[in-house]
Image (cartoon, rainbow over all chains, first blue to last red; front, side, top):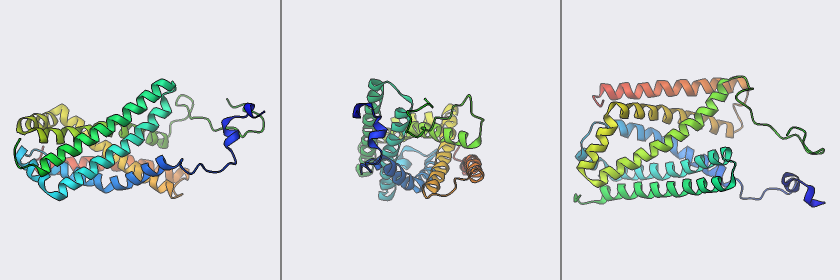
Length: 130
Length: 135
């Protein structure tokens, strides 16, 4: 008879799987970190606007600016991967399409994150050779 | 859908835009997703900026020139709005996570506050940037 029961009916009453809230908590924790980081990013962007290449390099060679830019990038790419994942899961019904888009989202966020961090490190640690 | 198996509680149904009365909390929810998606693009602009800076002066000047053009400024203003709105909407969600702010009156007021706050903050940032001679 178990075959006639819905997945929800089978799961109800069994308690928590202990790992289902990882996405929810990750999204919340990164959002808390992004509050000050976003405000800092707006302030930094206004400061950098209209500036020269040399000014931007000098700015990014400050360890504080470089660290905050890397933290902003990592936290943003992590948070947006989680957010886009929910959007894909909500709106894409076909299993193969959903799986493909979820993988694409994950790989894309990782690639963009690594590219951003390495670019920042190159400028921040570089000796001026371009 | 609604006539579930006897013994099972009726499952909640999704609101439908063509049936449900428009309300600001609904708009606020949709805007949170829309601005989040826009900021996905914004993060790629950050990546482009870092990549251009790491690639040298010519690439950087090209990139900054693109961002400083009229279409570039329109996109950047849209991203400023998105960033502030998504930030305020996120704060709303954090308050909800603490179990507060769920009554319709408070939820409507905080929705309007997030929308209004985003517009005011974005215009303020761009006015200050203009006064500093950054535009």
